[in-house]
Length: 351
Image 1 (cartoon, rainbow, N blue to C red):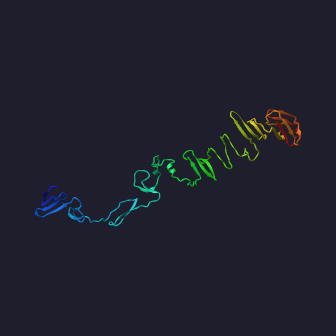
Image 2: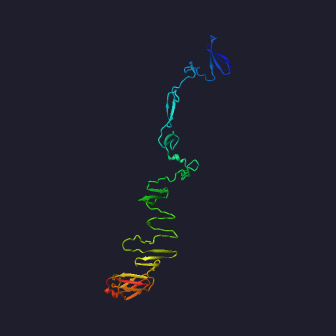
Image 3: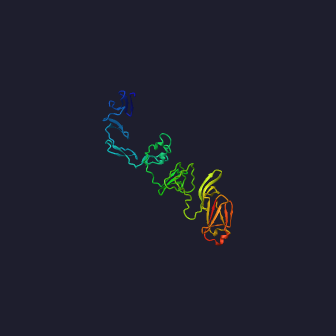
């Protein structure tokens, strides 16, 4: 700055420098030019303990000591919900203390789980917080069976479930495992009917009860039981159902081994045309079984001409009036014996 003197209303103001770093402002009264006042304008803050020129809000100039002041009050601001603060005496060290706030278990500091931006709060974890983790990258959790989660599981530590049923593929056409009276049931998803079960090898210990139609697709069937019971559901009353084993023969008629309940005889042969295995047909009859004095015998022995014996109620063999043979029946004429027919007679046919 160039040195110079400016006068205004009888007061001279002079600017000059005494060296490269000090700048002075001088005031001189024109009435007494020998009286001058000079102010040093510092290029940096003066040391503590010195005084500086000040101008208050009214424009009045004054002096104030540099340094040596004290802080009388301060505030930390709002640090909730992460910290709580307390202020000690301003001159102490530390004057301001920070303490982490207490929070409920299983909560974390975050904004809302959906929507726009908002101040964070402590809240419980929501599903939408985890949805961003689902993926296939190294820093994400893959949807489904993530091997990183499976490997972290300690095996043989599960204790099971207290639920009575468990659904598999509950979002589709699944099945349900159910416990009823200590037994495991395989049910449909709605739990209103039994479900199908497909296995390769099945070992059953104990009694097996099968309801409905059973199909065994096996080339070899091995059964340890020495007696197979058919018509097991017929346990009382007069028997009416035949029973046996049937063999399918492709395009040809099936063959069977059959118990003929009507004639009380085992039969064997083509289905519908089986013949008696014992080759003996026996029938007990009374006079009520005769039609116009004739007894008709459907023997099923498979031949037309057989040996016929009629035994009366005293165990005597009697000779019928006439015997007529057909392919499947024998008609025995007992007309002459009707007047004295009492009790039960027996017919025996041997083929």
